[in-house]
Every structure is written in C-alpha cells, then in structure tokens.
Length: 113
Image 1 (tube, helix red, strand yellow):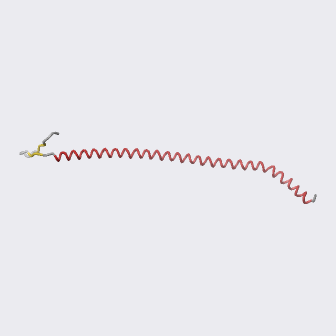
Image 2 (cartoon, one colour):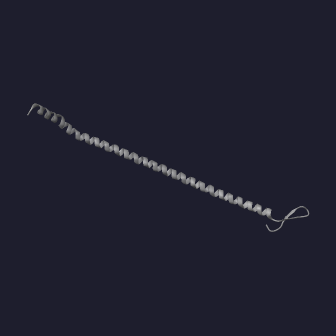
Image 3 (cartoon, one colour):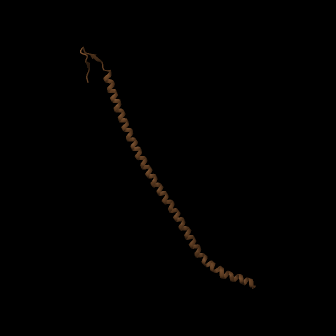
C-alpha cells in the first residue's frame, strides 16, 4: 500500500470514526432542540389564540350590554312619546268642546267629564 493511501486511511480512522461516533449524539441533541423550539412556537400560537378568544368574548359582552342599553332607551323614548301624544290629544279635546257664554262672562262646559 502506498504511503499516501495509508495516510488517508489514518486520517479517516483518526478523524472520521470519532466524527461519526460524535455526530450521532450531536444530531440527536440538535433535533431535540429543534423539536422543543417548535413546541414552544406552537404553545405561543395557542396562547395567542386563547387571548384572542378572550378578547372576542369581552367584545361580545360589551356589544350585548350596549344592545340592552339601547333597547331600554328605545322603550323609554317610546313610552315618553306615547305620553306626550295622550297629553296633546287631551288638550285638543279640551279646546274643541263647544263653549256657551254666560251673560256674566263666565264660560261653562257642556257635556260629561
């Protein structure tokens, strides 16, 4: 065997065998690290989505409260409007009743109530 082949064989044995032996644990460490990093990223995304869900729930609750408040104001406004219409109708009935003038200058209403 020539000297240069024995030198290459020596380098392969001295460098290659330990490199091959140590590359397996290094590869395992590296893949374990990558897997853990992916798990952390996924947990972060899940946590963010839970936070977003919580925010949506809070916004829905606020919208429901605003809707209830608007409904209460609408009912109150409608009630006030009906009362005003009844008062105006009562005033119009009072002004349209026929009045007979008395000689003393006093007005007398005819009819019931």
